[in-house]
Image (cartoon, rainbow, N blue to C red; front, side, top):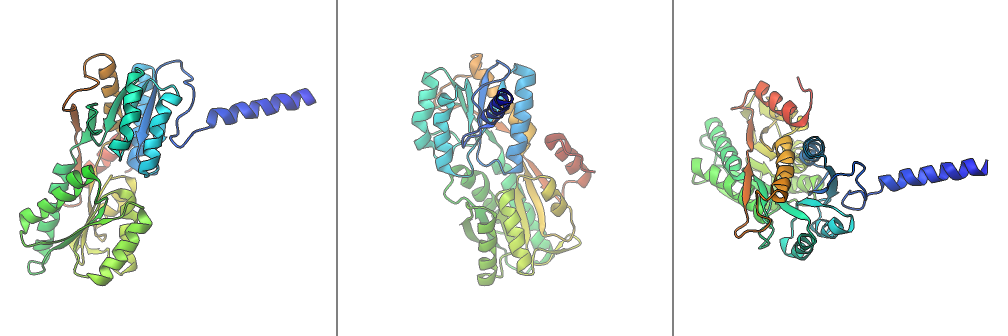
Length: 346
C-alpha cells in the first residue's frame, strides 16, 4: 500500500512538473526532441494572439519538427522584459519576441544571440539590435477605416461636424504609427475640418476603456467617430456606449457614432454585421498567416537566408484586412474568419 501511494504521489508530481509554466508560459523540455521555440505574445487573453500561437505551434511541428512554447506578456511591459531572461534559462533554441520596452529588453536579447539562439521580433523593431522584425500593414487599414467612417458619417449627417477619439496606447510608438496617426489622417482626408480629441490611454484593458467612454460621452457627447484600438478594449468601449444609451444604428445608418476596432474575431463578427450596432469595422489581423510567418523567419535566420543582425533591421510585412459592414460581404468575412481562426461560423 505504501509503495502504491509513493508511486501515485510520484506520478502526480511528474504531471504537475510537466504542466508548470512561468510568467511566459514556456515549459522546460521538448517532448519531441526537436528545436524549442519561445513564442512571445503581448497578451494571451487576446483572441488574435491565441490564434497565432495555435497556428505557429501546429505549423512548426508539421514543417520543422519543432516545439513552440507560449511566453505570455500579460499586457505588461515589465513581464515581457522579464520573459527575455527565460529564453536562455529554459533552453530555448529560437525566440520570436513581442516586446514593448526595446531598451530594457536589448541586453537580454543580445545575450541570447551570443549563446547561439536565433531571435526575431514581432510588431516592433527591437531598438538598434538589428534583428529581423515581422509586422502587419496596420497603417494602411487604419487610414482606410478612418476614411470610410468619415464618408459614412457625412453621408448620414452632412451638417454635423466630425469629432473623433482613439482609445489605446498613446505612448507606444508602433501603435501610434500603425493605428492612431493613420486613422486620424484617413478621417481628415475626407473632412479636413474634423476635430481630433486624441488618443486616450486605455492600456489597462476593457474596464479602463469603459470608464473612458462613459466619462467622455458625459463631457463631450458630440463625439461620433471612435477608434477602439484592440478587441479587448472594444468590449469595454461598447459596454460604455450601451450604458450611456448609445452604441446603436438604424439598419446600418449611424445614429450617434461609428466605432471601429482591431483584431477582428468571432465575437466582433456578431456586432460588425449586426445592422443595429455602431461597431461597423475592424482590422483583421490574420493569426494563421502571422503565426506561420513568425516561425518561417526564425528558420530563415537559422538557414542563413536572413541575417540575424543587419542595419537597418530587415522588416517583413504581413497583410491586414479591412473587415467592414459596408464594403466586405458577410460571406467573405465568414470565410476569412474560418480560414484564419479555424472557426465554423455559418
